[in-house]
Length: 219
Image (spheres, one colour):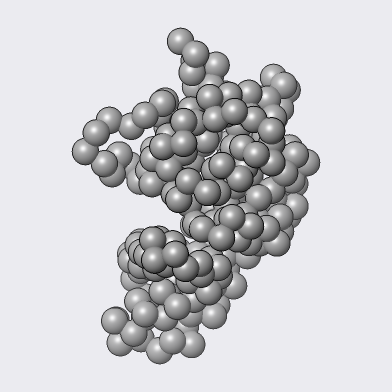
């Protein structure tokens, strides 16, 4: 099976960013506020048939959140820099090893740039598990727009029904499901499914449960 992984939040923890926020004397909740604004900015641009690269959307939305809290915008740079130093979840390597050993094809699909995602994967020594690292930059639309998922399927020469999206974000799962892909939602980041209907596909507590969840997709 083709298994497509989201990167930030799914394979990589945001704990370092949260710690940097604390070091700047800011409340750790700012991370959630920031990412909410970031997704709003990126998705609004996509709905308006515009495209803003993730790094630009991240900077603009972080500075907005700082401004709302009457904080100086120069606090943004050290926080943004920490996004380049994310560490993988402790169970990421084992998950990828098991999937690779079982013969699954692995692709990374991120709203970040290819360069940013490649940098994280190389530093974490996870890059070799993936046959491709793809960015929504290439599709000109951020997830959960259908275009990035269809691009990934086309690049992999795969049918949607033969592919599975693994993500820790409900919106990412909804996007993949909308184009006909199988899905596995990892619940440790969001804790609760953010939509009124039940999640499609399978639910995993963490990455360690993903290989077994993939084995059960056909049952």
